[in-house]
Length: 454
Image (cartoon, rainbow, N blue to C red; front, side, top):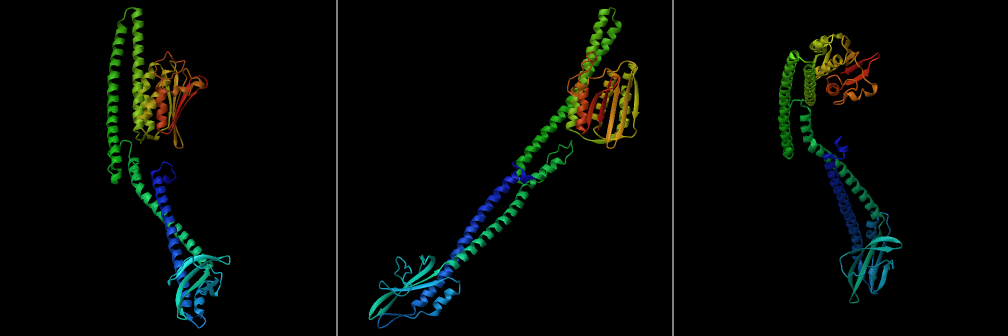
């Protein structure tokens, strides 16, 4: 199908759409992961900030310094979201009031608003928050820094889940986008198949302009195609006219020359004159036959290009061909022995097949000796019709049988017989047009057999 072809326009469009879908899927993955990760960090930071604020609100001044009563709720809210470890530290005047003395402080922090940062503590990554509260001790202000930290194991678990979810959304988006891209590509290239189908369904003689509804983008292509069809129709008409006129203008003068030469031959008084006139008649016959078969070959080629099959009675057609050649056979006292199955219906071009039958029988008569026999057989074997002509003429060489169907090739033993070397070429072409076959074989005892299968 079209998406497997390297030169397919639909395949190129589909690949481009899939590339866009892949880029959008990657951007969606990164966006979802980033937003969800930031949301998780914000939620965690809010809890850390609330814990530190709860501790800071319990700071008070005593006779000997700062007093603090750490509430249970400050750590319980952290413990409720994960099983991470929680650390704290209260720091003032370059000394730790309580808590973990080695818990890292922020590098610079002198504000009452929470300050969040990442640090390493006890070989574990922690997320920490620090805020400063000022209290009055012995009529002097004292700055107390409250630090609360929690390990990041729970946060990493949440991040991993968010990453997996974002990846799943990206893959799902790519699959859906890929399917929609495939549908869009099919819809886009469908008009091309409609145009191709409209042309492919036409018969051999249908050269009308294409008028199927098409998108505006395909209009230049269809206009060019219609222009080509119009030029082809005109060229075929000129060829057909030329063949008809050539057949008339070539055959008629040659026939006139031959008639005049025969009259002169009967009136000739000297042997030299009669010999010359016989040579003229032979040359005219050769020219007439060559011209006729050249025109037949051109006609065969033309009709093959415009092939139009029809059903007809092949048996009746063969009888007509034999009747037309019976006079030629009588001149040489050749007996035509027929074995023709009646009522054989053939599907094909009647004119082409008639030309092939005429050439085969005419060849058999022409190359047979006087008072000889030509056997003509027509039979059906299943779905194949076989027409066979056998003679007792000069025969053929087995090694040269295949070459005799080429244009202007004749056997080495028939140079003295008028011929053009196109008869078997025409038969071979007719067989090919009808998906049939043609074989020429030497006959045991002398002669040749020609078989046309349709």
